[in-house]
Image (cartoon, helix red, strand yellow):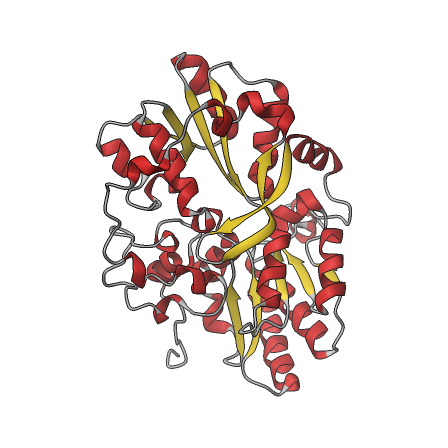
Length: 381
């Protein structure tokens, strides 16, 4: 390796350094010992964080006194049943439905979009909002983009709306906004959360300053973290330091991507197209200002205003018999773990999901089913 190559390697940011990782794990152990209670419970509100924690085996390295809970950070999981039903009804009416992959198998009251597709409905899987425009231009028939996700994907939807949609394309918005649901979790009487790890990609849009009012109201620290192993470990170390020092504040541990103000241009587009409204998050609660709906100025592309969506047409379809036993709501609220559910891994599997948490690649039940949840590696040399 030449001199310039060595210099470049030295300057390269590395986020999977075993030496640094062990130092941070030791810091977590020291901090939980200093706190002197078990468990110390913190919550992340991002499915991507849960994926990384499971993929890289981080939970096996956490101190036993540290309980890292996955909160309502999976957009597919918290899409409410009536929202899924709206997509199913439109699909059964012959409208082309375009949506992101995981949404297709999410159960509604009685069926999913995949079930409707099996009956002959026209359901299309997309990987970006712009593909909905391309699909509509190609088909020339009515197309509805069933738009889901948090701030990051909502900005992409706003961008295509502002650019101008084909006349045959409408938006069925099930977008959600994360900060309000953190308020709900913090106010739950049963909650044991002492601090939050916030999602770096959403904060890239909103900025970390969006969490300051929450911290002031609830006196709980919030740390913004990225998604590499060292990002997460560093975020947790900082969060435990703030808890130990009883210092409720926002800390940005993802400065290479996140600023206090965020992406002002993206925010302008987001709030020009959408307005926050109250709505129910699946299995959790009614979340004031938690849903993002199209503003009146964009009624001409709003599927809820352009189509008659009669949910009573699904009433003759029986809901799954096991649905009442699903505890996805408690899992996403941080009150239960996937393994607390009697259906987990038995009647509810990724191949035969009962609840939405077992469908999405960001759902805690599917992630735990795939990676093993809380592996105990203490006996491994």
